[in-house]
Length: 126
Image (tube, rainbow, N blue to C red; front, top):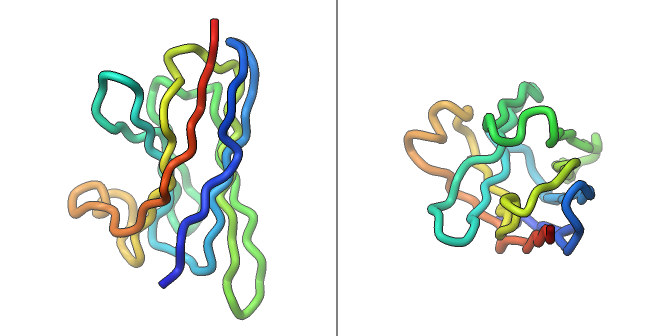
């Protein structure tokens, strides 16, 4: 079973940037990023369809950008990158990569994402 391997978390000051990556060895119907910030439930950050169409939460629009690095090899290796700019202290939390094997993002929101990474910590200081 393909794993979701996250990397790129860390600590930055407000206004700084970080780039998160989620590497896997297969294609999914939907992939994306969620986060859990202290005191709040896990929330959707962005989702990307198989055709690379992406949607973003309002609180990251204009600051976060997703891209996919897909290699055309028999293993279907791909990496989903989340470039986070102009970070704010409120962006601090654990960021999780998520995916659904076959469902598009609208359906995956309703039925749940079957694949999750272990999470990577992002800390933004003021």
